[in-house]
Image (cartoon, rainbow over all chains, first blue to last red):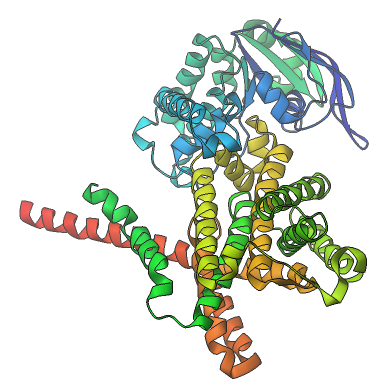
Length: 253
Length: 325
């Protein structure tokens, strides 16, 4: 199992945002994370990528315990992520954004910058991978634009590319289609499927139920911080607890 | 050399030629002296540029590191009797080491709190140097003797010019290297840099150590050129001066520190006749710069060039459209 979460809990004062969640993600699969607003989905992601430290519980990634590690350590171990508000280096060009995202896989330090022998090789490699990744997410034509000037959909794609360029084994996408219009959504779904084809596991928070049902291999449903269901899309959509809590009694799959 | 390269580096080469010939074009001793000081301070401003302009951490301790470099050099030559050049290198390394220790402490804070911590550190260094008579000579200060070769003003001018070029080279390499990418990532978006696997504390400390090394270097050159050291060479007013030079020149640009230091320092020298009133004029200019050129003179010129380029493109486009029609 690529990712194993055991009775993970996060409390903010009296509020239990994530309450004893168990979860397993298999390598190369897509896990949909759904639940109403405030169910603890983003908190769960923040625990997995180190932005928050768990109150209790264990997270094991690729055989290594990662709970309580700093974000940059977890990123280097192979978990990439995007943020709900599409965080980028707005003032810098796309190529530079990509290069920064690749930086953790390079070794050149300050002295290499003064006498650029090893640096030249690494720079060439970084530039090549940056372009490759821009092509993969469909932004090769905008390589030299400033990230902040991109339209929303391109920003989303760039953020996904930046999470991927460091060659993670798992990426966490926090609402990749938030604020994106109809036609662009199908493109993003295609992109997420292509990520799975590269052998990278994906956890995706999503509100659009039909989309997440079609996309995910497995789905976990959270409500008030608790896991109320987990399984294939069919299993979850027939689960009476889920229908009750999330889909509403009028929904039929 | 291709035409494009010539256009790119033309201004730099022209400035370098003028700089090399400067002592021989009938410049007054007083003027040369002012220019040497401006050069020394521009190195200190470049040191600030690395930590503030490229890494986004506003340090108000550069005056202290300038002083630590200067006093380090004085102690190592006067008290320890080391060779001048060895002492100078050691003094810069010691300054970087102090930067490491202060960085480990100060980078637990961020933003305004970091500024306050660094300012406090500068204040402490100033008070210690002023009062630790045995070590520093207290308010009486101490003499410092450089190698005989640099007794002449012209020789010192070329020495400073050489080190200005070295500091420029370091900034230039950093600004387009993988290490520099980490600096800019930390400056522009810390949480994202963290999520992308960049060790933020480590990056800040590396940047701070490089910055302190250069500030120490400027201090050594200042001590050599003045030939005399007093506690005012570690004064916190220096830190504020460097910030002003950097803001006027343009933080986070290669030539900003150089342009800013020379503009402000020379302008203040020329206005000496009007005494303290010059600071009123100067204050007004500073406010206008910060409001209308938030990226300083160099940043302003850059955007002007970009604007002209797009304007020219637009005109060319219009012409084409007319011809087509």
